[in-house]
Image 1: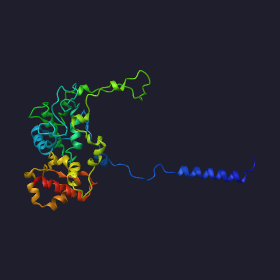
Image 2: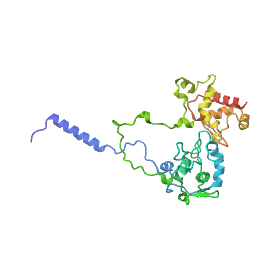
Image 3: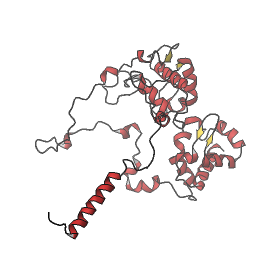
Image 4: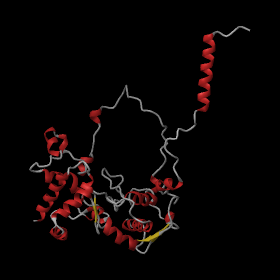
Length: 311
């Protein structure tokens, strides 16, 4: 047997040390912790078409109407017709083949679970997940009633949930196309000039077009605090989405009757609520209109602008 040279011996010792270290390496590195069942349950709130995920509870059309008028009508209209640019919830029957279809719960949506799930996780707009389960059942029942899918004495519950079928359910099918990457057309390609666009989102008034003009870029930006028109501009960019239509209980700008009681509390109180947020009896005021990048002075100037509209 040949003797190991000193260099080979050192090499073998290093290999042995590395193997020992790798063997001792932990499977986990003590970073973070496993999610508990309680934590997972907070996210596991989806509801499926077969009723999986539905909690116990029930709600009637009659109860849903009262909740809807308080929390939903300011955006979606008293009859689901939609206010300003807010989504239409009812109507639109037989319009899906039109150039501009109305995609509502009754005309387009496939399952009642889609409606229940969305209300539960995302509504009301400024107070998501603030509704209790019975209120979600009631609102779902009322919106179904607005679409003539249930009678006015109907009560929706987990037990009868899957018996309500939406008209467009069967029009949703699995996509049979294979999951492949597109290939660039290299021959006999369609002339782009022959493709006719009949309409786009700018026709609906939901897509701003002013920014398409280079000279209008500065006008669309929020003006710095202290600028002559910064109060109005801040209102347009951060406040009008609620105060133009009275969404989420917000007092409509310029409506003297809606502002009288609020002005009695004093301007300082209004400014404090606008900056830091406020939960009122009729709705919720998000801090800085939901835009934390605004300076306090910009918010104050927006409040001053709205007060001028009342006086």
